[in-house]
Length: 230
Length: 127
Image 1 (spheres, rainbow over the protein chains, first blue to last red):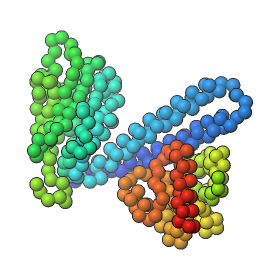
Image 2 (cartoon, each protein chain N blue to C red):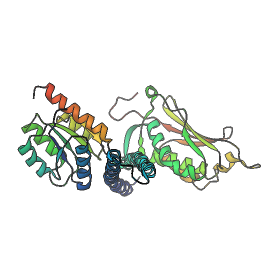
Image 3 (cartoon, one colour):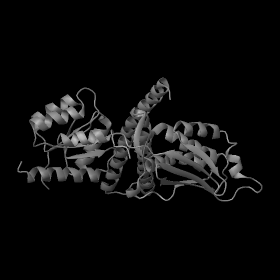
C-alpha cells in the first residue's frame, strides 16, 4: 500500500473513530433521558393514560440504545484498524469483527453469516499482517459469496491453523437454484479479482474448494512483532 | 444509608443534569461541573467523597483532572465514566489512581453500585 493511500485510510479511520465517540455521548443522553422517564413513571402514584404503551416504548428505546452501543463499539474498533499499518492481532477476533459488520449485507439477502465454531480462547491464532488488508480480503470473500447466495443459505467461516499458515474457509451451505454451479460461479464474481489481488498482497493464496463449495484463503502467520522468530 | 458527597463532571450538560436528577431520585444528591477547571475548583471547595469524571473535555481534560485531584486530594475516589473506551486510557487512569473505569452509556444501578463501593473503599482506608 502506498504511503498516501495509507494516510488516506488513517484519516478516514480517525474521523470515524472521533464520530463514534460523539455518538456514544448521544446514546448516553438518550439512555439517561429514557431512564428518567422510567423513574418518574415508577414514582407516579397515579397510573397515567397510556401507561403500558409508554412502558413498552421506553423498553424499546433502551433496547435500541444497547443495540446502538454494540454497533458503535464495533465501528470504533474497525475505525482504529488503520492506526498501525502492520500489527500482530488475533485472527479469530478480527474475523469476528468483519463478520459482525457484514451482517447487514447478509441479512439483505436473507443469508446467515457466522464464524463456526468460534475458536476457544486458548487456541487463538495470532498473525502479523496489515489488518486493513486482512479485513478487506475477508470482506471481499464474503461479498463474492453474497453475490451468488440465495435466500436461506448459510455462509460459515472456519479458521484453522496449519504450521505457519492460517486457513480461512468460507463455505456456503443450503440449496442453490437447479442447474447452477456455485463453485464455478465464484471466480466470475465482480469481487474475485480484488480478492485475489489483496490476498497476494498479504502473501497468501486464495482458491476455490469445489466440494464444499467454498473459498479457501491461506495466509501466512508471521512471528509476532517484537517476539523472537519461531 | 450514609450521605455521600458526589461530584459529577462532564461537558455534556444535558447528560450530566439528567444523571444528577436520576441520582437525586435515588437519594444520592450530586453536585456537577461542566469542565475541568470548574471541577478542580469544586473539588477544592467541596472535597467530595466520590467524583464521576468524563475524560474527553475541552480545556483541562479528565485525565489531567484525575492527575491533579489524586495528587492534592488522594482521599477523593474517582470513577471514570467515558465514551472513549481506549485500553491505554483505562490503563493510565487506573495507574493514576482511578477507582473504576466505566464506559457510556452506563446502567444507573451499576453506576450507583460503583459509587457505593468507592465510598466504602474510602471508609475502609480510614479516610
